[in-house]
Every structure is written in structure tokens, then in C-alpha cells.
Image (cartoon, rainbow over all chains, first blue to last red; front, side):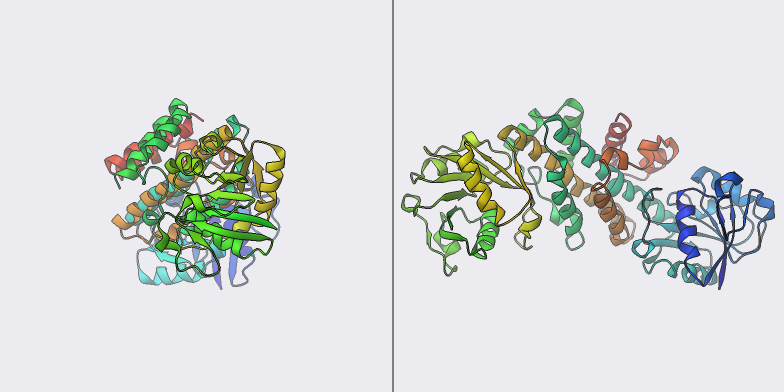
Length: 246
Length: 246
């Protein structure tokens, strides 16, 4: 049995809580939230809005906004391993006196959609191997996809995630804008989008590159630019150049 | 029974041929290729490298490079509906004297990977409704996802496809570059990529946008820029600005 206290009650905290409550071998002893009212509807979970009254547990999971991690962690005086869940914050931002770690689930969480943690990679970091084993043991109840990633690597991964997820989604938005302007149903593009995301499971993205840029098909590029507004043109030009320069 | 002649033997032509050969109600009467040797291994298919000797058929499918479509179509004197398969070429580029149409499968084709045409949207265009019905009847043997899309719309769709597919793939490439530079396994990002492509089946991409740009999280953006090279920075800045300006 591993005992856990969850600090925070945002998106990530709520998804983790929900997942841990389904695991018999994990005892969620308490949830802390600054605003008591947010968690007051929860049955079977003890909660507090007073961080000085945390119950002792094996692991404290801080799932609050990045900026709040130093202050919140500095206020925890209990023994036990204290981890945060952020992709972009160093392990050194934890300001508690005891053991520190990171448990970063690399997935985008939205309130509406249930998360299947089996499919979520967790990036773990601790300061010693005992703590790593404990954190890994806890994480294995949620997912088999566990990676030892240090703070420096995690920061890079976080930037890479912005490119492959946030910026990719913006490409979808521009695609939809173009469709909307010309009364073309965006759904025509959905299979192409799925295929694009699927094939890089088997192919290096560089090898999977297709389209007029990589073919250096000047005529098609010229035609495309004529169909776009200024903002779209700037993005089209920059990305075409970037593809061509490898 | 619908009889078909396929003109060309590139990627699209080969995938279409393979698919039609499995349909009893479609009779592939002939394949034309400039270079006879390319098709000479095919059994049960008649082939020719002499375009003046095409067999009569209901539909001629021209699947050659965009630039070659006017010349190749001008050399076909047979009766029957003549269609091309290109996303970026107008129906008017067909220079045959008889009936014209377009049968554009909106998917990226690679030689290595078998295509499941069931999942491929086909954009159809003809000059009259009889031809449309014939082309639709043929296409329905491959896919139920059929859209009536005129040449102007198809050109826009083709640009949109560059954004949602080619440019998206380039985002994956940059993500992989960043991972490689810091010894982080790219596979950590794969579930996030799949999730990003999946959620727009249910959510408008604009609503699905997450990340530091849309949150106007200046501190994270600043940190990210410090981790990138010049080329990556330029793309990061332009796309962040574009997300923020809606």
C-alpha cells in the first residue's frame, strides 16, 4: 500500500485523483485545495484548505500552477517524498526540506475528456534511487510507459511538445479557416490528419515528409501562396523554407 | 460492370489499380505507362506504352504528374469519361475533346504502405450529372466518403492539406530534432501526438488549442525560446504570435 496526498485540485490533480481512487493499493489520504468549496462535493476523500494540516503520507503530489510550486512546496513540513507534475519546472524549484521528485504525465489534459492513463508516458525524476523505486512503483499503477528523464531533458521535451502538439493544432486551425472560407467541409481532411499522426509511429518524421516544399515544386507553392491571406502566407513561406533546408 | 483504363503507373495509379483489381464489378481493361518495363510484371492486366492504342472503356483515370495532365489528356481520342486524380489541377486542364472529370483521393500515398481506401475521402467533379453518377458509382466500390468538390474548392482543400499534413509533419520533425539533441526518446511524445490528432474529431481545432501561446504565458515562452536554435526560434515566435492573434 502506498499512501498519497494530492496538493491542488486543477485539471491534472483531478485526473490523477480519479485514477488513484480506482487502485486498491493506493490510499489517497487527503486532497489539499486553497478553495475548500471546490472539493467539498467529494465523498470518501478527506480534504483540507490548510496546508499546515497535511496528513503524513509516502508521497505528496503537487499539481498546482508552475509559478506556485516553490511557495507551496516550501510550506510542506511533513516527511515523505514530495513531487511536482510540471513539464517545464526543474526539480530544484521544490523548496521543501526533504526528498524531492518529479512525476510528469506527458499528455494534454482537458476537463471534459476522461484520460486513459495506460496510454500516458510518465517522466520521472528523483534525487536518489530509493525514491525513484517508490515513485516508479506508484506510477506503475497508472501506466507502464515510464521514462527516467532529468530536469534538463524534461524542459527540452516540453518545448518539443509545444511543436508536436500546440503548433500542430494551430496548423489544423488554419486548415479549418481555409475550408470555412470556401465552404469546404473540414471533415474531408480528417483521415489525412489521422494518417499523418499514425505513420510516424513507424517512420522517422523526416522520412515521412511529403508535399510541394520537399519536392521543391515551385509552381504549386506559387499557386498556394496566391490563395492565402498575408498571415497564412508568412507561415507557409517560413515552414516551406524550413522543410527545404532540412 | 464499369470498365476502366488507368493512365500512368506512379504511386496513386498503382494503389488504385490494386484496389480495383479486387472489385468484381470493375473491369480494369488496360494500364498505360510510358515505360513498358515498369508494368511488365503484371499478370491479368493488359498494358501498353502507346497512348494511341488505348482500349475503349467507360472511364479513363489519368494518374500522372500534374504538369503532364494537359498533354496526356489531349492525346486520348477515345470516347468515355476522362478524369484526373490531382488535388491542385483544375478540371479545365484536361484537354481531351470529350467528357471530363476529377476523382481526387485526399490521402498521402506512400509506396511502402498499403492504403485502406474505405477510409479515404474522394473529391469528385464532373461537367454534368450523368458523368457524376457514373464516377460516383465507380468510386463507391472503393469508399463511402464521397464529396462533390469543384475545382476552386479543391485547390483550397489542397492548400489546407499542406497545413494539416505536410506542415504538421514538419512540426514532428522539429520535435524529434529537439529530442535527439538531448538524448530524449521521441516515442515519449507519440501518445501526445495521437491525442492531438484524435481530439479534433470531436472539438473544433480552435477550441482544442492549449499551451503557453494561447495562455499568454510569457515566462514559459521566454524559457522555451532560450532552448531553441535560431531557425526553431523564428518558427516558435511566428506561430505563437499567430495563435495569440486568433
